Amino acid sequence: MKKLRKISIQSVKSKKYLWAIRMFFIAICMSIFFGFISQTMLSKMGVVIATMVILIFIFISVLFDMLGIAAASAEIEILRKWGREKIKGADIGVKLCENSEKVCSFCADMVGDICSTLCGAGGACIVTTLTNSISNIHLIMLISISTSALIAGTTIFFKAIMKEKALKNSNKIILRLGKYLDKFFIIK
Image (cartoon, rainbow, N blue to C red; front, top):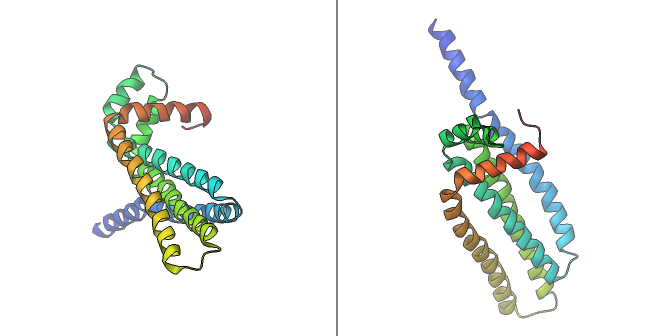
């Protein structure tokens, strides 16, 4: 009897982390895909357009981090109450909160971190473009460090602002996300 119980517990434990393994492979595929696209696109663009693309990646990173934090901090009972009141999006919001570790991992870790990595790759493209005709190693280093610092500073600045808003308005954010998902996707 004890052996059967032990096997079933191990089976449950292995299924518990199956989503993390899936996320690992999805993250690799997304990184390759978006990395290839960004490297081929950004290397052919000028500095201004590459900077705009990096700002878009920063915006996406900040947005998805906000969604991940909101899913992890939303109050599921409030969303259930809204669901009973037939407020559109609340039922999907409950599902998002029930799976908050997966939602947070997808949004904050996978999408957010991939976008941050792509910002770094975009920054490298900008540095290469700016320093193509410069032979002074100190100037090249200064441009490289400054570009990285600006990208990191901008990302951290907007994430700091977003985190406060995500924590204070988590229920409303998840409800809005639930309405969006309900409108554009079929989720049961």
